[in-house]
Image (cartoon, rainbow, N blue to C red; front, side, top):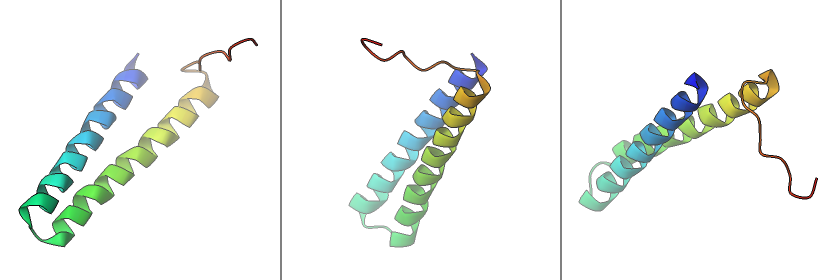
Length: 69
């Protein structure tokens, strides 16, 4: 349950950084600021992916079964 909560929180942070990057783009702020927000979003996406792979490999979460299988 804790792993799922951590994934949801990381997804919220990822979306927040995406929105901050959009705000920086629309308001015409420094492009480095927008790059920083988008880079953080990418970092959170990589962390989520690694966390999911490690959790599935460790048996903490189970993927959905394939249909018809």
